[in-house]
Length: 163
Image (tube, rainbow, N blue to C red; front, side, top):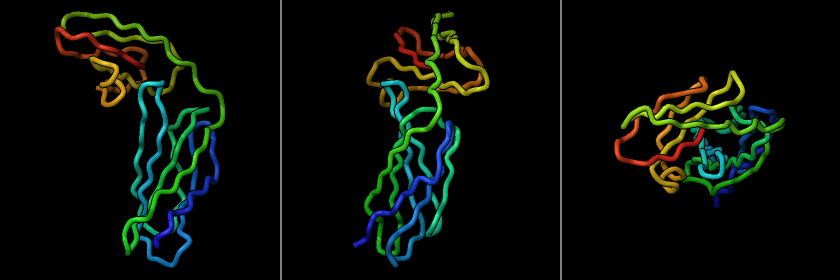
């Protein structure tokens, strides 16, 4: 039986998490697959996937959001097959930034000007879709460090926007 890997949180800060991976077995490990999950707003779950080579590993994941719960799951790739999943949860330190205040205004049939308020020197994600289900599952999106963006849309559709 292949055991799940051990995920140990080494440290965390406002914008990063450092964790180690190891196996408690003599089975040869070729690497790990790690998923980091978090919820954006209440509508969208985000995920980052890391493919890591080697038997032991310390990883630092940066560009995270302060005071946000993250779930890290991992499995090992071994000579006998994939291990079961292992999970840990951690909340980054600091104060979560306030949600930006978004305004969207149609410029014409196929363009919407989105503008918002919020802190400088951060990256904003603009998510948009024609239904709440699509906004949750697979929205169109763009990123910018500005406080406005013109989004191209299909004519004769209503859109929902998040920033």
